[in-house]
Image 1 (cartoon, rainbow, N blue to C red):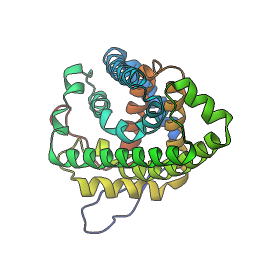
Image 2 (image 1 turned 135 degrees about the vertical axis):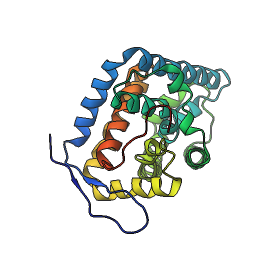
Image 3 (image 1 turned 135 degrees about the horizontal axis):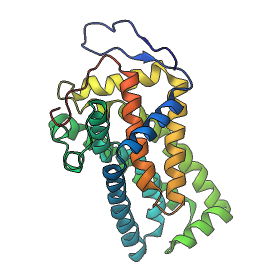
Length: 270
């Protein structure tokens, strides 16, 4: 395991120290996340299955209403809401850190997440999600003059026509920029806000500092999370029942290593 060095005190703003990490850290987080998943597979799997069921019903409703293109748009925007959906998994990671078995009641109702600062973060992510949706709608509208009613029509147009190729390229670039900015704000702040001693300012600034101080490994981490999530979606959502809890627990491990000076409160107390 690589040695972790902490940064010098950042000043009088009350910001916690941020650690320097190596390029292997993202892969270590995945390994630790998988180990945690196997320590409590029951509650984690139920949590993941609930996400899959709700997502599947949402996709079915869009398809039935003839809004197939929105399935693609909103699926790509999943990254914007995933950190809030993973709050229960951060709670599970905190319980495992304390030597306890995660309980579903605490995972579905994280008491320390029911407060103003978490609501502010959720609102910011929702606004970014809606902004991404409008951008995607604009890119789609500028790329074609017809509406595609089925998902197969959307895929055929996107993969086999110049307009579709242009939409994919423009959407990937614009979406990637917005998603990475969101990632910088939330990668550490979401699990950090489980502790009521941290406010939205401290959490988001610490998150940005973590990415800035460890840009290359954090870029690798973002790529791994995106790749695993995308592959799970392409395989029909069901793999998300395992992938989402795995990544949520790994994200907790990432937070604990990036901000090692913060001692987490006892599970359920925040």
